[in-house]
Structure formats: structure tokens, C-alpha cells
Image (tube, rainbow, N blue to C red; front, side, top):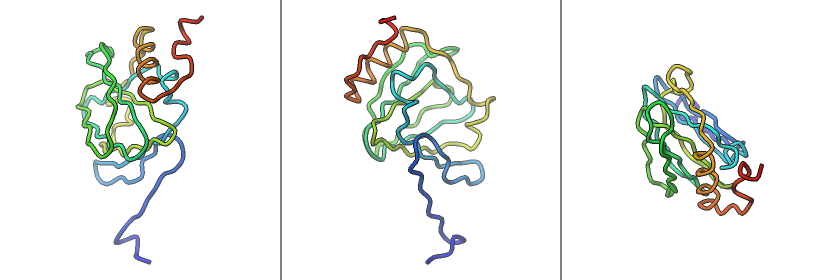
Length: 152
């Protein structure tokens, strides 16, 4: 076996997000399917004010939601990520994502993207939430009722 002083081999198979390698100012993380990221459970977006963030779809499906607003999410676009393509979300851009049950995404980011100062959240309004539910469910082939809020 090779020494970990020469080569680190890491993996993450649990649900959700986890950093797997940190080095100096950058980090490689993995995002796996998590029920919290189902379209019906998304009610906010995050941005990184000081850094870009790179996403690469490794398996399954991932829908990347991008907001064009400055102080709030603004108009949201749903991007159906393609495997092995590199998606660089520019600094200051609101984003969130939803994955299929077999979804796995590689993330390359600065280590300070978790910092509250660099990574604020914004709540979504009812219209934005409904858009994410409708488009996310359609793109992920989820057949559950898409608009729970309108049924209240």
C-alpha cells in the first residue's frame, strides 16, 4: 500500500455535502443526494461574495438553480447539468441545486465558502419556490404533486 504522505485517497458516500480534501485556500467536496435538496424542500438560495464555485456532475442528475438578482434571487433559471461538464458559478451569483437519488456532484471551492460573511442566504418568495418545485420535479422526473403550497 502506498503511503498517505504520497497519495491521499478519499471518498464520501453519505447523504448531503462533505469536504473531502482541503489544501491551502481551496477545497474539493462531494455533494450526494439528500432529501433536503428535493425541489419541494428548497426555499432559499446561497451566494459566495468573494469566490467562484465549480460543480461537476459525476453521476445521476443534478439541477442547478441560478438567480440573476443582486440583493435577492431575482429571476431563477434551472440548468440540467450534463455529466463531466464544468459549471463555474461566478462569485455573487445566487444558486442552489437538487439531485436525483443517484446524484453525485464534485465541488471545487475556496475553503471559506462556509463562512457566513462570504456566503449569505436569501429566502425565496412563493413564486420562486413554485418555479423550483415545478421545474425541478419535471427535470428530475419526480411525479409527486409539485405545488404543495397552492394546495393549502
